[in-house]
Image (tube, rainbow, N blue to C red; front, side, top):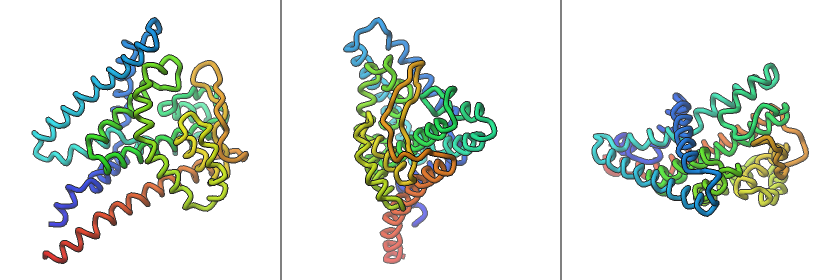
Length: 314
């Protein structure tokens, strides 16, 4: 019963989640989750409180969300007739692949003909203020945000394969908390500290794996030269990924951006060449192909023993 055995394998379940995300993105659900977490955070994260209290409050809020989430999933898995089908549904809720497959072509399509609409299309997935973005800034923002969201999807799937659905649920919750309580913004820095640190810890190894995989492409010498630039970034794993990806296609990322009215200056990554529409597409397609590469390896690792067993026991 090879087909029944496949349906219970994590690789098959995460593939189902990816296909479901591409066919039916969880855009509305994800927006509601982030909005709900932001409302919860605003109730606890007051400017009148000391940073020490806010760190404790943010940590306690994360635990108060995590424990019921895990307990609810455990109860559903016990009661549901097909518990394995819950896993791709939960992964679907946390994946950004589907959203990006709609937003990226939209932004690139409007980048020349209708720049205000392109900025508006980018805004739902971008923390920075998109209104003042120049054409160059628009391409940079799209490339950086999309690349990091794809990397987070990759980290989510690695967590699922390595630690099962409970670790993936924890990482998925951290992903939403980091979006709702952004550590980059001063007003959330104390409250969102523990979720941000936990997210960075779990994402570090998958980000490194994805970064090293980009050396398989042409332009690896430029990518290697850009590797040390990553340590200048606030989170070195993200910095290395952005630097190597930009160096590989011979463009520059980083630089100034606005999260509030003030301008923040981030280190420049990659090369001195300006990014454009063609380079943005090339950069993101490289990451997508790396996704397919690792997914293919996972399927090969799964299928070879199953096929051998089916031949031994007809």
